[in-house]
Length: 93
Image (tube, rainbow, N blue to C red):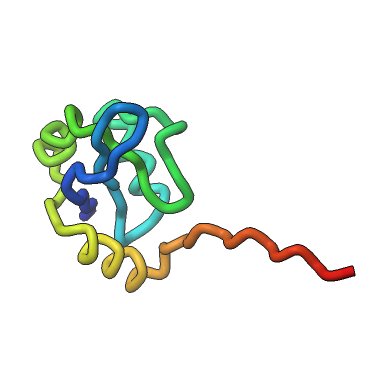
């Protein structure tokens, strides 16, 4: 089981956030996230948003620290990347 976490550099809701991903399966990701107390609502398409104050907990539980680009590379290579949907362009009438 290998989970990856990037540095807490993503701002939102008055906090800084990391991303937690698996390069094996979403099931593995959900199990790991639950084991460190991440609520399911923190799951966003292909990763968990982890607040900076929980970063050390994730690493202590076995998450491997990687940079953001490496995290996305591993997620994409595993075939687990789910990019955001682009809004549809309005059709012309």
